[in-house]
Image 1 (tube, one colour):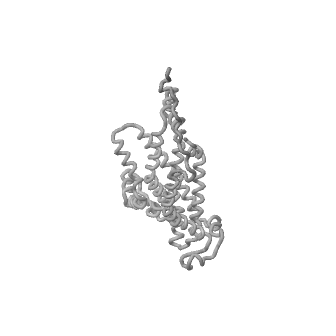
Image 2 (cartoon, one colour):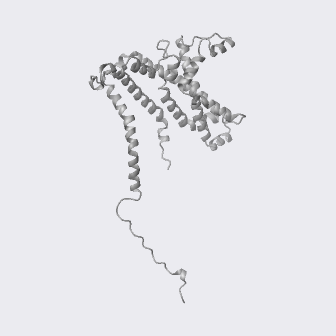
Image 3 (tube, one colour):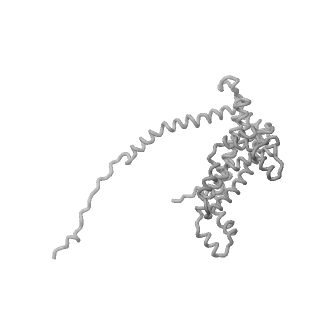
Length: 318
């Protein structure tokens, strides 16, 4: 009885062992790194070198009227200690910036969240209004500042509307309280769309199953939003606050165009104060020390804000 051909054993095919040497693709990887070197060198030259020069400058007493930087006297941490202990204007500018940031961010968050919840519904003209609400974010800060400077003039449109409503107009740029309010109104108008966009994206990413389960268990719409949706939005909200916090600390353009920091120094932010130190008073070394203090404070603020969700954001998904 002959053996069927399909039961016969097939001879094993021997594959040649890989030759010792470089792994496949190693050559192309080396070539790719070689092509990256010019970009890395330019980045090092443009970004890192000025930072190191400014850091060294902050420990000296150099000004442009005293010759080159190499001839400046090394002061150690004297600039930093003077800023933190004796310079009340610097400390007031920091506090004022934090107050502006706190008020602006809270208003932007509340208004952005309200708009995001509204746009989760269906209504006519939704796409047109969506584009309209995002438009302020696209306008240059200098243009925004100049536009609101014209709006808040004594005989401008804002006071005209107040007169029509039966209220008296205000001297927006002569009173410190009104000037402060004008800066906050401008900042809120300009950057509420960013909160709106981020929170709307977060709401669209919320899974439906927990919401349906809560509704089946008898939760009201308010309870669903408070106890189900908001906790799942927590990382998105914190990231939105972090992004805006980094920007509002650098608030300069709108204040410069609106009030120049006045009246007096009632609206002077930390960025505007550093600008005046460097380009009005030519105290570049002192201004560099102030800038590095702001940088350290900003890094600490970002780290503090991200701490509650850092593990969740950095969690391995694969």
